[in-house]
Image (cartoon, rainbow, N blue to C red; front, top):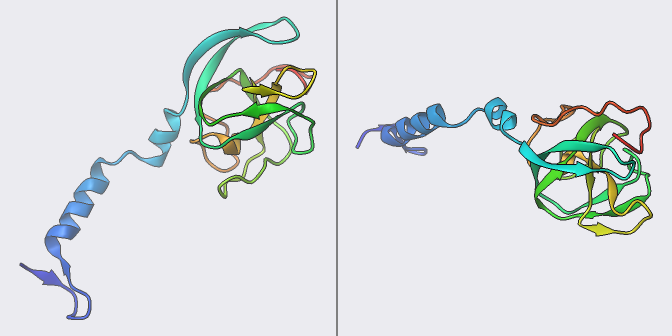
Length: 151
């Protein structure tokens, strides 16, 4: 076997070649982010409007908030898994979950309810499994409403 480097640190060239080959076929971060969400069900939100949704994987349980802000009232909780969202919008700084940073919030309905809004509200983009710091979540449409309580 051929080794590269000094006697103190011997790395077989075959291992280096294998690592390089695996890196060449790995998905790039941009490609992984572009496939983060897919088409979901059609839902009617509390103000009576109907929207198509996107399903996005979330990796952590998170509070659903009345407003796209950390200090918004909790309307419910969303469990980790493949969850649908109606849209996304910029808001206040997200909860810092797993080291991620963002100011994008996604409108959905929680798995549990604790408020008059029946669990409807905003989750931080930092709870979604894919996406970059201060970037929107790929595959989710932008909200168009001007009232921060609704999309």
